Length: 230
Ligand SMILES: [Zn+2]
Image (cartoon, rainbow, N blue to C red; front, side):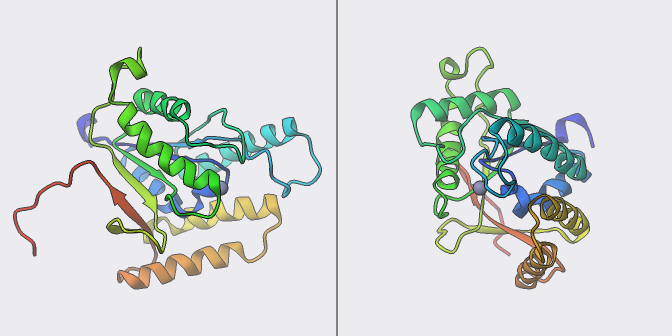
């Protein structure tokens, strides 16, 4: 792949394990030679799944764990300083994410949808939409330089989604999905997680005639025209 063809994918989520539903897609892009960055907006410090430990211990464990996940996927990883359960849709927060977008200059962003039950998930989805616009404004993102590309926002599929949906064939990277899920299962003491995640990918795959798939919706400023419809 030539340098010009290499794409940059930013996956941004509030909490550890939010990324499980797009591990196959991220791994596909890594295999193709793209740059993939997994960004956690918080350290998931409100968790009770790690037992009675201090916030500092959670932060340390999260960073160590994220490094393992990133190694499996083959991507980069970073954390922002948002507070778990307090990711709010404000202009200030949108500008903070715009700063990240203007640094990384992604071609596509993977994130939550605006319908999910967790408020941090809904907030990050809306913040990404706002930040993509903010990142186009030079004075907002100074000194990084604006990112004016028509970024493709890929959101997790939700039943209430009205945006067009897309399927990603993850049959070649299902082993990575299993490995990442196992990594979380070991930390949290989840039972049957790998089987559940695999079954879900298989059922999504049946909807589009492949062995395993991940499903998303797609949001762009403009849709690319086609010459033929079939
Ligand atoms: Zn979450």
